[in-house]
Length: 198
Length: 198
Image (cartoon, rainbow over all chains, first blue to last red):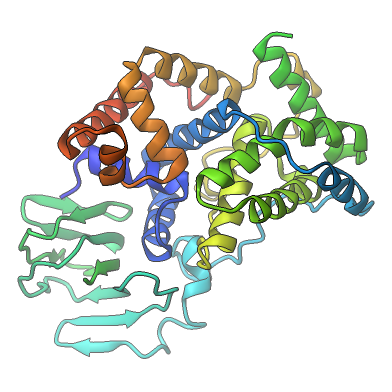
């Protein structure tokens, strides 16, 4: 379960650039949906700038400066914006490059009231990254995990033990925990899931 | 110059690059930041050659993307830290960092706030990002030195907690609890002070 500290550790690790791609994707998506986390994340990024300013400088070879100055173009600076392709669906923008053109036409793996759409990412660490759709009232069979499991609710509601997760909420489950999350009714639930394997 | 005047001068330099491709301003930023970016990359394991090449790329990105810099949202140090962090993930980890929506875009999409043209008066007034940075510097100064040290090692050097424990000759549990305490103190310091929104 998320306690503030675990979430903060993820936020600071993301700000510092420590997270692997799949975990970074879940956190970046969560940030799009949660203002409070954005506020804290911003502070952690400012911390990065502050620590950078405080580092003892290491001089570069003198020709480096000349080389960079010579490479400066005259082109007008790139206009603002991050150039992120907007999702056509209401999903967070960072997910866009990982999604198929059409979610409905994609090949979901259906298993009873659950449907899973695997997303591909750089596999420097083993893990499973997918969108998971649960029919209203559907329960994920009880399970525990080898590694950490992150569940970001994108639409609808998910009940996990005593906790009700709404869109934007991120659940961080420790390896030892066995749980059987259940989708809310009547709208079911769409989640982004990352499970570490080995 | 005081710290704050130096920061204002660097903001002015970045804006001068964005507005009229000011090479002298860029030269000043290069002299200040390039050796710090190199030091940061070296700490993360780049060899001197790699670190200098990546630093060149980072500084060229500063030139090209200067128009994206918004002094209300980031100090120059934070903005350049972000560029260095992202380049380093792409280059050294051979992984990609998922695109991140800028806070401004997310807020605009959520109907949170209107994008406004930046008044020149921002140079006289202390920007929100500078204010946050100042508060953060105060918060870190209040941390017991042993907690601040662990925060630095963890954040900037991407040192796993186990390695920090070995380096400092401390039990792992002590490192974990010091890091947690440091994060909790930073969080408490910023909790509900309203400084993140104006």
